[in-house]
Image (cartoon, rainbow, N blue to C red; front, side, top):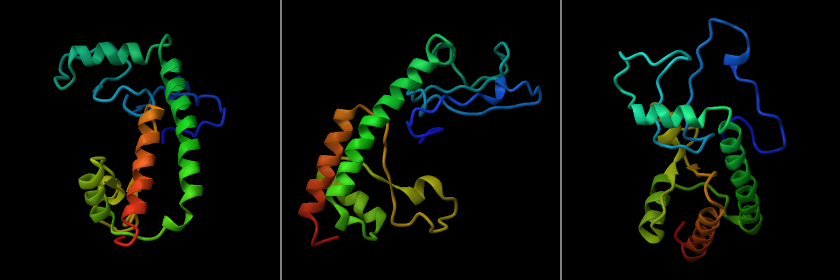
Length: 168
């Protein structure tokens, strides 16, 4: 989840706005701003044409998304979706307390994909280097998306758990 769960907190001040001159801030437009696929590699200066990996269209979209005109609206859009989806997730967890047992994450994800055509990513494959094991048995859940899509996914997961309860 990006910087905070939606509890009404104010957006944190960027380190770029801190007044410290020797500051480098890195991030992406994917999560907080809901602009996946846009690649940005620049400092807070005019475009350096030695940067060959960022296209001009990507840069133009990123500049607009990060502008004062759009930035807060994009973050609010993501927060609003997260709030709604959090209620769907809380309801799902409350209705399935018995399903919170260890599982083989990769086998579960593959079976769910084959059965429901929905992809869960094993968390250890996304977030761990060298398979350290601390996230073994956990799945990565995409949380900020259109609520209808998230609700549908939770319904499909509930159906899958009910149908496969003897196999898991």
